[in-house]
Image (cartoon, rainbow, N blue to C red; front, top):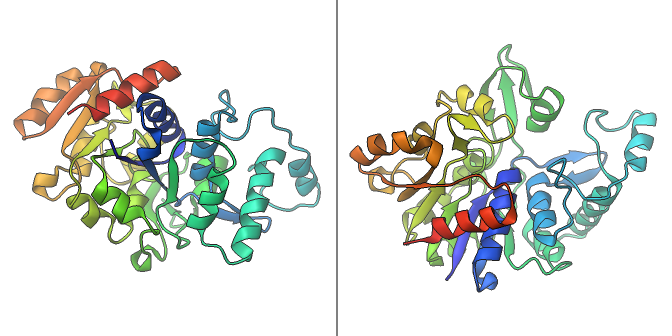
Length: 313
């Protein structure tokens, strides 16, 4: 079975790892990863979502913090702060910085981000193909209530989404193109899955790349997994993102935000949590194919069970 996943963030990393463990032929998994979180900092290029998924699949991620490498140290970050360089509220771990330096060197040598992702993925037997959504730099910016614009990472990491956002922007995305292999991975997959990632700043930028929605329209089958359980986000501040675009923090509201392919949206099937089973009849009355499943990914076995449910015909 050929499976393509659109993913970003910790939820995406956990789902992809479960999928890799659940599918017998792991070479048939392609992950199209959000790059809207990317940024330049202290002269190096950071790609947080690609690295989170890479580290999780390699088994070297910090499972307690939910980001970065296990066994991390922060000597270089402390030295940068002593020099007044970078962002004092954005810590770069030493092992993580090694990844950023390698990436930046390859980019400076002329490699495209998709080629860099391939090199990074070759270090460990991760069992999937990682593709950035685009090779174009389209970092996400946030407009807050007083009109100030800032990089998404400043809003998310420094302010913890406490400043009310009124809009999310991706400068340059209208001229971007899907990275090589992205469209083919979507069109040729037996199933495309929208992981339980942030609908606005993880999945949203992927769908905004010209050509991706059109490719999803030609896909065989597209399944989405709700990132909302019992009317609450699992982790992070996705509720603040949803509020900014006028979407209620609810599994059925997120489904309608994505939309059914039969009506110009992107989904055929929507998985909701057992805690949200009462929402299923309303969606079914609108023509949705809704599946009620246990969505908590609290351990590898449950993540694999969820992945199998997403692939079920």
